[in-house]
Image (cartoon, rainbow, N blue to C red; front, top):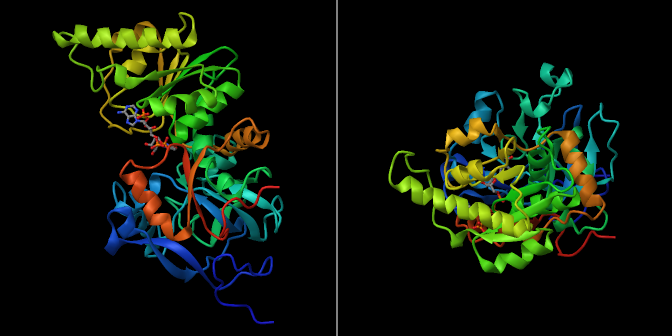
Length: 413
Ligand SMILES: NC(=O)c1ccc[n+]([C@@H]2O[C@H](COP(=O)([O-])OP(=O)(O)OC[C@H]3O[C@@H](n4cnc5c(N)ncnc54)[C@H](OP(=O)(O)O)[C@@H]3O)[C@@H](O)[C@H]2O)c1
């Protein structure tokens, strides 16, 4: 029997048959720039898998900001970076969130079977990394990378190459596009909320969630609620209020009702008093949202520069501000007097390890966390979906693009 060299999207090869070539969305260095220019459809070789790898026939992919950066070639040229490490490819076939079917497994893989319906967690590390082998948190290993951003052959490929530990069970009640859009944000949010003991969500704890209607925030609201906490959502647009309440927020604050944002003024300057007035009234808005004078034990941060001075102040004595990005800028300011006297913690957090990805997937499998799919696009709209994100015009929640699933709404049983 002869194997076809290339299959159209959705023209399903016999299970386990791997064609030589595949369709993929790819960035090349000579077209670095805005997403609709940098991300182009190409036919490339299907990647070979190593002994601990898995090849996934991708049905749908999520869209994340990391591949806006990959297309810009900024702040890191991921192609050059990998070539320096010895990888030959002169392109980036990205994508960090996938749902699909296991199509091939490496010779050392015994925990994943061909034909299984799965989602992919984007934590990638060298299997032989001594840090990982010693049982320590792999997200702190020197070899850690974000799959489909810092590695090639991610979810914008007809066949994606992943390590077997990245493979998690696809929730049967979700369509391909719902299943393909949540894991990166859900696992990141879960690590922020449950990965930094003793600052983990416990029954009745107040958690302040910035950007609550965003991809990350919407998942954080639901995780807090599923764990018995009280999430207070922050938004900038009244249209998002009901969405946050529906996702489990006990109260919602519109940050447009305040104007003290941005870096903190000098503590000796006349502006400081007015700034502190703004911060204190924001703190009161949290109490009103919670229904009692209770400060957040955890502040779920990613805006950074614009909001961190407020986060540091409103956080409970002995509480934690946990941050995974600098959406509004990287130069943070903070009134240190409140930080040390009230013994607060400022914790950086990045993606998640396997245990955390598995734990949040259990919440999705149990129907306690919804992926918050905001919009579904076609494979050919992968550049467009990134462009919406680049221009901050994307719908709130998490976007997906179909890959081998050529029709929306399929894949749920
Ligand atoms: N390190 C990691 O592992 C990791 C993983 C996932 C995401 N991230 C990063 O986390 C960030 C959020 O991701 P996302 O998927 O949630 O993005 P998103 O869907 O675009 O949401 C971003 C949210 O930020 C809020 N925001 C924008 N400007 C703000 C400002 N000046 N002050 C306060 N809030 C502001 C917006 O909410 P309002 O305007 O309604 O307030 C918006 O909902 C991104 O920077 C992303 O790259 C990091």
